[in-house]
Image (tube, rainbow, N blue to C red; front, side):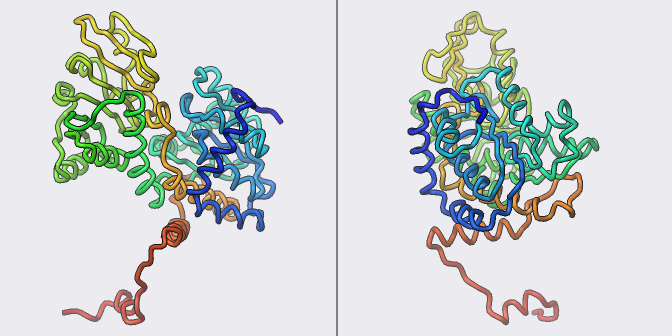
Length: 419
């Protein structure tokens, strides 16, 4: 079996980590049990470009249980857990092409290896597989049943492809599923970003001014957790509705040009480029920390930061680089500007990824069963998938909810009862 991982000697530790994560992923486990019996993905070749974590490993196990012939590659150079990658290869027989810290050339070689599998279905975390197919591997497009996308950043790219008319196959925006973005993006990102920052800096958040760029679901999660740790939160936004929401949630809202002077810690989570750039670095305090929680490392203009620096101390602490500017001021870049929750920590808790990956697995089953009904556009995840995942998650949490009476059902479906 072809693969490219750091060290197969790490497999035992990785398998243990995979089992540990699985105990908090009961919804996915129930799908895996059904898939193992029904084999709904039998004969489907899959390539998936995802963060190679213990949670992803349990999704991979589920897809394989359903009959899929699966290959994995990393969706970010710093998000691979090398022991998990080894465990997937040795313990579960799933080919993996991912090494933590891989350079750009290796990253794209691994994508090439995943696409050499000639997939019928792809799964993306940032739309790199889809982009590669539409640009460099166009011969694969006619054989693709569909693709699934896990991130906000990826969905933005896919909708741009759809608008320009270059999308050649159906894609499902799993990121937009309620059981994904309402929980994974908000609670998962919020908790894991704080964890990653604390692991690599050890800073006290209480009393600090934290500037969060972007107030989408991920931004909301980060601000709430920062606030809970005693930080004073400033939000920057370009969307008036989100800015209004942030203001009414009790946060200061201002342009980044003003916020740059105030922040002790910066977290970008927008999905756009150059959110922090030269004009902002020049205004920042001595000792400010700079981090990113968006998918790609483009939200912080690292080239401009490097140009401003007279000296750079790489690895002054694990996942911390010091940039000393001409005026003697030091700025600290965390996790090379990549996803801080995966560069400096283990990503989202298994409990919340249970829902996201359950939606991924069920959407994969849906596209295989309904492939003749789909066209080349970006689809929402079926409501039936969201509803099933939510109900099973509640059941596993031992949470009961009300049911409508016959009269209530009738009332909600009628119009003739008024005041």
